[in-house]
Image 1 (cartoon, one colour):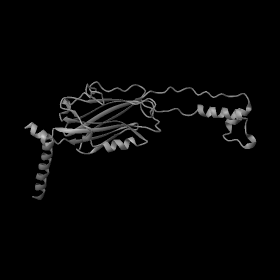
Image 2 (tube, one colour):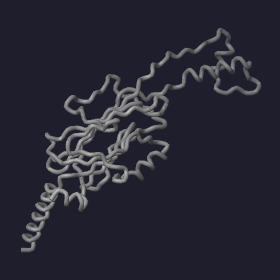
Image 3 (cartoon, one colour):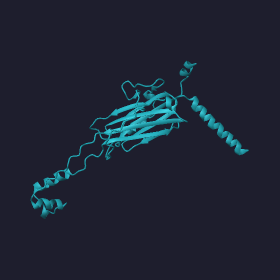
Image 4 (tube, one colour):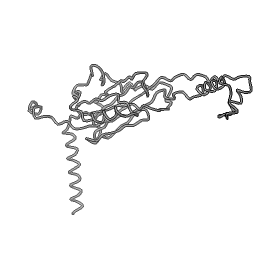
Amino acid sequence: MKNKLIQILTTFLLALSALNLNAQTVFDVEMVFFKRIGDLHFTGQQEPITLDETEVSEYLLADAENTLPEGYALLARNERTLEGVYRRLRSSPEMRPMLHIGWRQELKDKNETPWLTFSLQDEPEQEGLEGFEGVIRLSRNKGLLLESRTVGYKEVAESLPLEIETSETSDDVELLDLPFATDSEQQPEESNEKEELMVQDIQMPDQLGGFFEMSESIKVKLGKLYYIDHPTMGLLVKVTPYQASLEEQESLN
């Protein structure tokens, strides 16, 4: 009998949870996108990676006009909850936040939910990748499904051939063979200058270049902060149910 009661209670709670999800039709989605900076040495795909035509849409985030689908609205700054996270990222020597934005949307089935597109470009002199093209969407698909895909890129610097000047004198050859010279074996000042130039020529160039992709599909739990990670970039996302104010509720009656 006890086991049967537990089974009935579990079934009731699951049904209640599903009912609450169906009854809740409006959600707030907030995201912080950042790129990694510092000593990065990755070589990405040389051929361009592009977003699929079915992903790219006319609905733009981080745009001057912020074109959004019907039933969507941008969150005001005082409605966002990740402001502290964004500030901590700004103070980090390893990360550079590129976008902090949030929106309110009606929940629809996956096949009825459009992608939201964002395009970001950093200053060329900044560390890390230069540009990003991404899409993101929240939909209903046996629960809450969050999907995202981002392509980051940086122009690949052309590697110059190593040119080491050699001298016909035996003194220069000996200098290459001896990493350190004693006082009695010190070479003329001109030879030391040549050694410094040769060391500079053989230093490794910046290896960060090409195209990089970060994608993820997540079954969302409300109120949980999700971290989508990549060696060159990252995305923080949080989904919360929207609670209408009394004024809004009265206006709907």
